Length: 527
Ligand code: SF4
Image (spheres, rainbow, N blue to C red):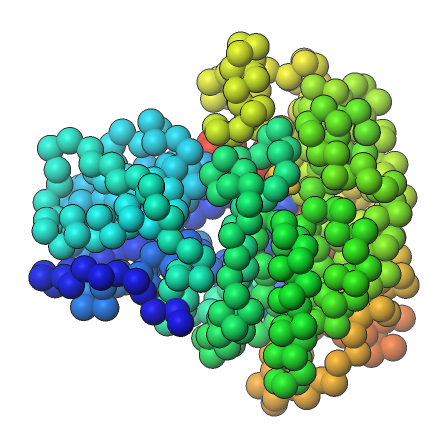
């Protein structure tokens, strides 16, 4: 289990430099929280590129650089025979910079991952493209690199026709990274999603029938993640953790037993559709496995908007009821909200803010709609001549409402949602209705963990409790929690609040992105 399938026996010795491009700050990446956690420099390890690194022939030397932690040096480029990259659309400017740097050193470049798989035409300057998931194209690419690493005269393209089963993927090469530099560890159980939300590229890229890993395989990965030094939370990066609810039901008892046998060393988070609230048995299993949060794409509180985007799964019960139900199993809901929908009106922001106030969800990623290639939305808007290449805009969509009005709706929405008073009111609600329902697993911290916890607490106290201009609001909630010994809640709240409030202020000052997928934002931070 976990060993690469590569049948090709390499003839040459190769040095492969894997570089994961830096991403722009966003609501969901917690940049402003890192300073509070000793050693942390980035959000999550790049799963996809680590899997590719593990799949390469064992005879080859592999160096792995995540630009979110450090940039590659001249010496790194000089060392390499070939430079492998992967990334999402948001990372496109950085991908191009890495490509240019590698070419300046005369090195062959290879690009795989979701962005190039959806839009190969965006990368004419990369030497070799790997399209699709791990599979026959990866084997062909390895054979190619074994034969030659000189830059080809024309671009070479390897496209996966036969995908490798998820179970056959190697365990990501955690040995090549320092797990303690990441805020969260990550793991993948399934790939693909059965739904058809209009704006989403997952069904086209990864299929509508979720492919799965077995429970023993997931447990082996959890062991590997732990052995690599993960402490705290592990995020299931599946597009939809309940894409196949039967499989989720079968997996969870194994995770519960794994946790029990090891004294509950980890907690979990995942992404799932909101209709998870229909399945009390799954929610109870997740509670017992120590899941602490779920990201759900709420998108909009307006039913006509959900219908229009084909997100009917959010309409199966009132949104607020679904949120309450999930909270009742000790899980905080993190919500995705989109503005700029065709169904939006001048009243939409009031409705979004009313939903935020009523649902008491502390953390929401509030973004403008962006049309990703390979989505039904992209095809529809192209047919309607409503796609724009205007790079002064943060979305590629010609909205139904005037652009400036949509942006100002977004600004008002984040300003009010992340006003410290409103944010801490929502946190306070969570301390009453959500956190008390969490599993009270025995805590047996090692002296090292205890010291780390105290270090984080003291940083939160100083940064948020002393230096922040909203410290009074913080203490009104943190004071009683401190007296009750609810330290973990204070830490989580402090880290999240610092990021959300700072990111909002930067965004309102014009230094943040209104649209997670916008490419130009990634370059704002370039050196
Ligand atoms: S439920 Fe989520 S992953 Fe599935 S199609 Fe909709 S947005 Fe995409």
